[in-house]
Image (cartoon, rainbow, N blue to C red; front, side, top):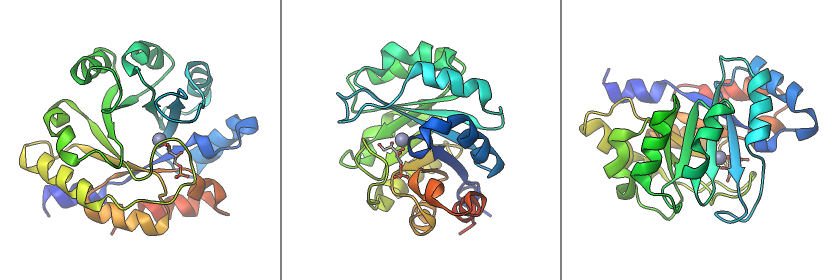
Length: 227
Ligand code: DX5
Ligand code: ZN
């Protein structure tokens, strides 16, 4: 079996806290843990980079105290100047810090700032940003996040980014970065999961699908199913 297929078969599920019952965050986190999610996806929005404001460092700090270390804290920064806050998110418990290529911070400097912490480096691109825009940074990244909705809100309709995912997977594989994680975020459910995994994504963010499911563990299993 080729390395490429190995990548595709190793799927991680990152649950978006944005769709959780925020009044009962502790029990929601425990439920996610019992349901077998691999990561907690923490959407940070500043009302400038996107038209919404969510939560930030103090909330992550609290979550990190109750979340088991089996679940990685996967921080998605939808903010204008991510470089300013890298150290604080690291201190609050982040394991992966993903910033947007379209932000105003210098890309290489932000990568270096994340690398100086013990966090993994994620770089995200919005639906209108081409795959080629991230190619120069793939050698420095642990994960590329391909947005499958316009960032800003949970519960939006999935946009098919298969071509973009394929190009990134192919570039990574042919340049010695087979271990690169490709994450997708927005509108992921049991059906769209098949589409993105077929294209080469291996970290699936899911918010509304998981939290609306009658049986969350079964929903996680469905997302993880081999293709
Ligand atoms: C959108 C966020 C997503 C969102 C996903 O800007 O980055 O993480 O919460 O939610 P669903 O799965 O409901 O599309
Ligand atoms: Zn997100």
